[in-house]
Every structure is written in C-alpha cells, then in structure tokens.
Length: 148
Image 1 (cartoon, rainbow, N blue to C red):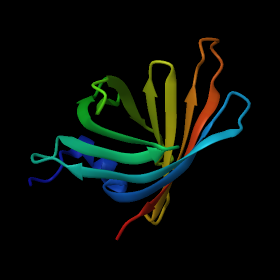
Image 2: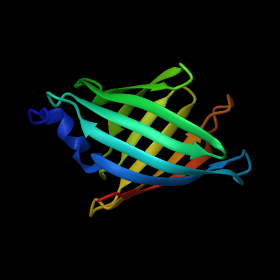
Image 3: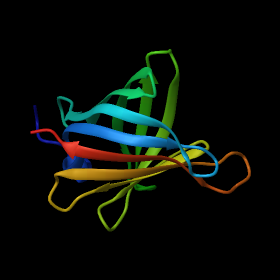
Image 4: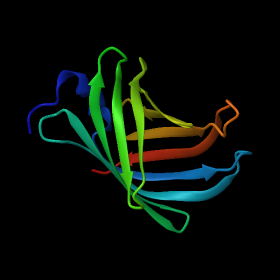
C-alpha cells in the first residue's frame, strides 16, 4: 500500500483492531443495553480512504457495518464518512479533527466525540443524539482497547 496522503495522516491514531465495549443510554441517562465486539480501521490501498469494520452485539442483536472514511474537504477541514449496515441502511457523517487530538463525528441528529489515548492503547467515545428538540442528550458511551 502507498503511504497515506498527508491530510489522512491524522487518522493514524485510530488505525488498528479494537475490542469494543459500551452501553446504550435512555433519555434519562440510564443504561438500557450493553455493547460488545470489535471495530477495525485499516488503510485502503492508495492511502486516501480508511475502511472501518464494525462487528458488535447490542443487547442480543448482532450489528455489522462497513464504513469508508476519506474524501478530505480542505475548505471545511472535514472528511466524509459513509456507513453501510447489514440491513441495507446507509448513512453519511463528517469527521472533524480537533486540536486536542480528538475527533468530532457529526451526522443528522447524531454526533460523537472520539478520544484516542496519548499512548494509543485505548479510545473512548460519547455518542449524543438530538431527539428533535435542539438539545443533545447522551446516547452511547463506548470504550475501545487496542488488540495487539
């Protein structure tokens, strides 16, 4: 594979396989189900895209998804995210790098802040959703541990 293009190098901290765990929260912030599985981020040939595979159990239901991250927009400073799941659904979001090394993933009615650890051994994420009121509420709390 060719080296990632310069604008994509920001993603280097999330490349790899991750043991995923977390919880889904109700509107009052109470845990409604657990999330367990794996996430994997890998460079596609050419270094312009990242392939993100999700394979998790949410409650008793298996969720699998495939996401492509790339297509850097230098004017906005964002990257396109296009996700496809096993049910045939798809969604689009944007990824915005923050000065502290975290990422804001933003989509219609949902957003997430992903925080890689300084040593690259873990990440955490808080997903929020807007139920249509304009007020963001916590939706999922996620943790990722690097798989060696």
